[in-house]
Length: 522
Image 1 (cartoon, helix red, strand yellow):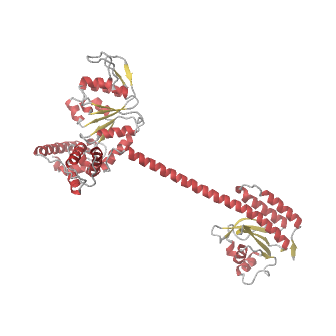
Image 2: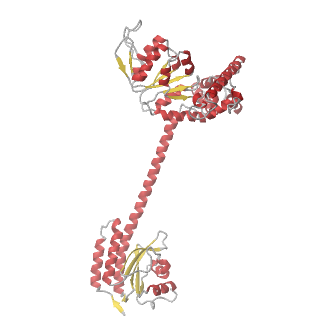
């Protein structure tokens, strides 16, 4: 027996009440209010269930998103309605109303899925209405009765259409808000990505600019630059070791440039270019009349470098009597100007460099061991050019471009055989010698092609190199004996020689030293 739908006037009042709830409702509250409204409708109509489905992004699958039931529904949450009522959903998607008051009699015979579902769950009446906004169907709302048949009149269906319109407008607002949120999230994601790209670009540009005077992609230079980056931001003393012409001054400038003191000028003193009496004054300053010729007061390099970095080049040439005074500055940060007993306190970061063998100088008594230990906080060995031959082509082109600017030239080609020739030369004078050779070639060649050849080796040079090789071989063998033939690890030969193990192995192979510490060490 059909049950009449509740008083239409009261239904209209309920619709007005529900509609007022959605006025200016934040999108975040739409779902909660739809659930509350569906419950009121079910209770008001005295039916058993109302389900609310939304079409997914693909526009085909209809998934239940809201609902209220007074009984135990036999299906699981999140069910796809297309699977159990495909014909019903097809009509609803076209914007039609599906009114099935008497089940299963009202179900068309070819609606097999609907017939099977109604028989399975005992469904007696249902009506489905589309949620339509601007000609687009966003979802459906279905009213169902299991305990009794319902008399869905045209007026009651019209009321359901109004309810569906209220829900459709709210659903559109929610979906629009969701799309906006996704768009904002995507914009934020892209913004963060761009920020990261900009940060990486700034770091790359910074890295390129801070190394703009450093030419070298070889593993040997990569190792050195890695060590410099590690120590640069500290205030630790750095001792740069290496042969003449290897670029120790550039490395000192890089340490300062990467340090916290970079905003102040690095002060440089070459300990080999000044006599001992002038060097002391240069370092520590003097008062007027402190010695003959001191007609005015002079501020020393230590005071000038206060808060900055002081680069002591050729530290091995520092006279013994000044070494003790330097040691005090390194220990206490204090010194006295010549002619003044008052101590001056400074905050100076020290970078020292030498091409001398300080260990031998200590043995000979020409360099203080305590000063060496104070300077040798963080030693960095700058490799000679023969250990980074792969960097030579870049250096040659860099020097060539530099001389093109000063000489008004336009060199566009260097024969590969010339580059091969310079890469096969030992370069005892290192980078300085290579630059001189490039400059000589620029003067000698006037065209766009630069013909570059290494210096001719004299018999004296060959003998000197042989003597150097013999001395180097003897020194490596001596160290290997002290370490019991151990090369790697702390206290190994490579550590003692301040070389990478791979570099030491290469040297040993070249000099005919057995890596197994066997008979060749005799």
